[in-house]
Every structure is written in structure tokens, then in C-alpha cells.
Figure (cartoon, rainbow, N blue to C red):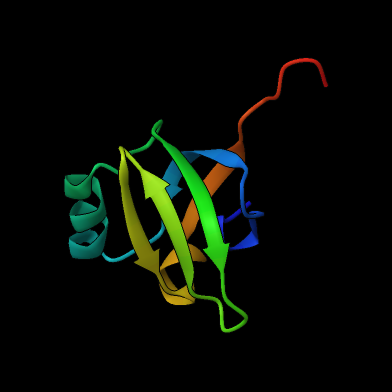
Length: 78
């Protein structure tokens, strides 16, 4: 699934990027690396979203979030 398909409030693990190299490196320099956890805080109708990773909040547009592959963090007791 892509980050764009995720639901607000749930944690996800970043698996990979399908972005231009410069943009992928920029996200990695900010701390969004494969294996890191990201949480969607808010989503707008146009596709923009606010996410939190490594203790910081960032706004991402649909063009970026739809090219970040994530998996949902397994919940205990489910």
C-alpha cells in the first residue's frame, strides 16, 4: 500500500520509495528511511497530508505520498 492510502492515526513502516533520487535522498536526510515508522496525523481532500516521523511533523502532497510504499504496523491483541 502507499502512504496516500493510509488512514490517519495509524502507524506505518516505510518499505520503499518510487521517487526521483534527489527527492528520495531528501526524505531520507530528514529521517524517513526504509524501516522507519511514520504516522499520518491529518489528510486533506486534495491529497495533502501531515505526517510525523522521527519526532517531526511534515506536510506531503499526493505526488510524494502516493510513491512511498508502507505497511501497517501489526497491532497486538488483534
